[in-house]
Image 1: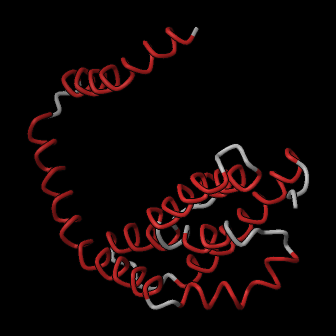
Image 2 (image 1 turned 120 degrees about the vertical axis):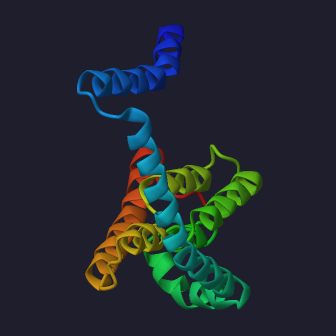
Amino acid sequence: MQAYISTVSSWMLPVIIGTVLVLGYFKRVPIYNTFIDGAKGGFGTAIRLIPHLIAMMVAVQVFRASGALDILLRLLAPLLHILHIPADVAPLGMLRPISGQGALAFMIDIFQKKGPDSWVGQLASTMQASTDTTLYIITVYFGSVGIQNFRYALKVGLLADLASVLGSVFAVWLLMGPLPK
């Protein structure tokens, strides 16, 4: 069964591309010219996104390097204790909406210190998989189409990330029991 799934997945992309090419041919679409036009549009979008991406990356680095993350974690320590969120995982939950790479670095650090099969490792994995990089999404997608008023989308996205973090804690608690002392 595993070999069958591997074979199907390795042929999936060529089949999709082939289907698009055949359908385009029968519908008399100028395939090459359409591809070139799409590439030109993608290049323009990439150029428009660069300032937004640089601004976001600088903001993330300033937030981490300035010590603001550590101060925020100390302020939130009582709330984290009430919610049963270990201090090791809290930075991952806070950075994931801002930076996928920063959150991934924290998760790898947790794996190295506690192990991927530990309660905290399972929580980090669940949290990493259930949350999203909300600020990156807003930067890229809203920036690419020129939307500047995104305050409601930001609120809803961050609220969804908070719900995902809390849901991750609950799911791991259900599956593995309470956090071992």
